[in-house]
Image (cartoon, rainbow, N blue to C red):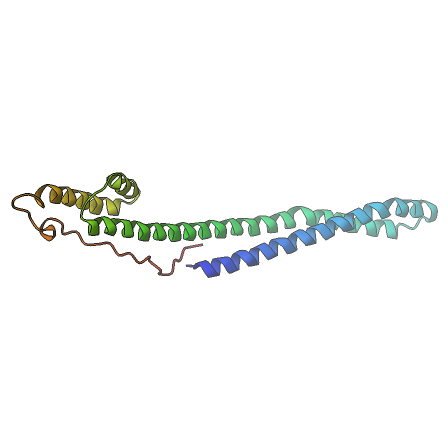
Length: 186
């Protein structure tokens, strides 16, 4: 299980590793360009002198570099890139949870303000239901609040009013956001 800080650290480390790998690949490609430029001159020297050693050395280095550019670099890049994608998804999950926690705290303040006001105003029901639609846990609380406030609107006034506390007994929601550490499998 990793928290946001550990995931950020890992993301930075992986980004640096990918950058080093890209720089190394770039230097190998540059060396191949140099070999390509030297190859013609080496062929001419071979033709003139018959000395095959320099030409074979260049060809061998070129083959080693070409092989290294293919499988090992691609495999290493794929491993690092896949891990980086996993870390980014985990960070995205943590960010979404943090966002939902902030929304929950904001909703709790709104919910409690309606409770303190002791009545529903235009748009309150729609706003309550739209938020609760994404949160099954809150549907029951929203339904209870609306029902009890509607009941109080009918029974809390008139010749024999019933006190608010006897009709509306739903508890306020905690307004403090959940600040517990979020960890994810990554």
